[in-house]
Image (tube, rainbow, N blue to C red; front, side, top):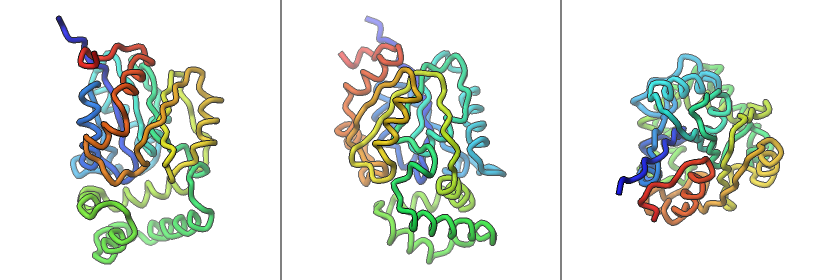
Length: 261
């Protein structure tokens, strides 16, 4: 019996993640779909940073990567900030639908207090205005603060500090903290993946907006956090069951591979 081909999934990383950090998720999903993971420029050493960081330029880069793959059909997915990037794209006829994983829309939807958001925004803007990103990013004191402030395991913080480019970090943080334009929704089927334990985005208003703006919507409640401490393949297997993946593939008009049976 010939095994059915797997659907293609183009997946764009979130802020403070890349294909190295999310290796476990990629390996898990690759059992059921062909994962084409796109590291945004400046998020991994293998992808040089943009000369000008913007959502539009990130989107243009992702589109160029997709064009180079020459896929007959695919699902377009974005994790958190990655969704804001893909929402600025016109994916074309080959795209069967959009996968929005804990999506970031704009700063209004951040589950972050006004004082903390304002403080972060001032610090980021000041760093950029004084042209300090590279000096700060590479400074040992900043590394110590990053380790102290973040809940991430030390080895993952080291990987991010090693792979991410400093200006990209601060420019992208500025977008996240200040971007207030309404989100653009493609006229495609959407799957919205939310986690009730998510402390980064406002799930309730987000869900209502997707229901208003998307004609054909499927909502999946997963068990992983926005920035999970555990990122192994086993972790995602327990928090994102294969039955949910099967339903998502069917929703987009595909057929799960024979390994599901």
